[in-house]
Image (cartoon, rainbow, N blue to C red; front, side):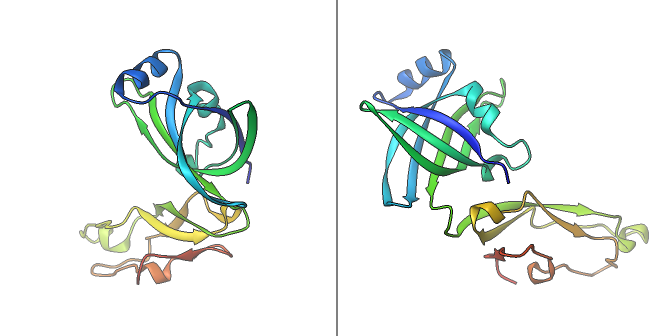
Length: 181
């Protein structure tokens, strides 16, 4: 898995107006929190260049992208491994408006939501039935380097009334589901 690199700076201002000024300058407000190799990190606000963020985000993984953060602030640089935990997008302009980074220890397991991709045409659908997809993402626990980009589920053998349980989905080595059944 490829790791993105990103330099961020500590944000001194807060509030709606300060965020608006940042976005107008091509920056995005964000926050970093979590646990690194040195222990628990108190949440702190950051400023991220939007172009650098888009370049660092894995287009397939999106929220599960592992990034090496370099934090400029207070006259010193700090390095962290982080997972893009969440980001918000302006629905009209499609711009990233905020980003959350979860600081991680690369050797410890983390929780992540992995999208499910359904392939094939179910036999039951050919016979007039309909497929009802209840879950589109699966929460898993894995080391950051083991998090899959997606989990593929073949629905072609399904007859009318058949069900796929979480326990029957094939997982790569090192990945465990957190979601029940």
